Amino acid sequence: ALNGGAISNLGTIDIIGDSSISNDALSNTQLTIDGGKTLTLSGTIVTGGTVTDNGSIHVIGDSAINSAAVNGGQVTVDPTRTLTLDNTTVTGTTIADNGTVRVDGGKTLNLSGVLLSGGAISNAGLIDIIGDSSISNDAVSNTQLTIDGGKTLTLSGTIVTGGTVTDNAIVRHNAIVQ
Image (tube, rainbow, N blue to C red; front, side, top):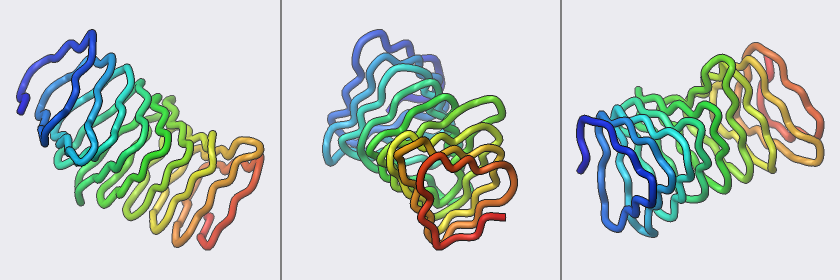
């Protein structure tokens, strides 16, 4: 377990066993979570680089993965907790947001091949669907949601409130857009 400081990763951090990072600021190049392993985040900000998630990331305290690429795996956000994803691209990942996924004003979250479900999405910036993705059983407070040409966003049991939805492609929905 790493706790309470600054971590400067200029190489690779490889999570080969269940591990946690708490109350840290991680300046990242490459963070890899091995298959079947869990990285637990609490009060942690990961900035930059690539997060290769072959296992799972469990957010038990408000945390952020900013200006990064998150690839694969499972991300779980606990109830009453927030995961901020500012200027981040998430690809091929399942996100169970039992708490809140947040995008701050003036920031972008790109989604491609993402299955996002279960809680709240607080979007004060831009969520850009750059690859087929789905949002299920979520409440989205929205500023700007854009679906790129040739891509599909599937909404199921989701309420999108406010802002603008720019549909350059296909939105399949069983949802409420207000």
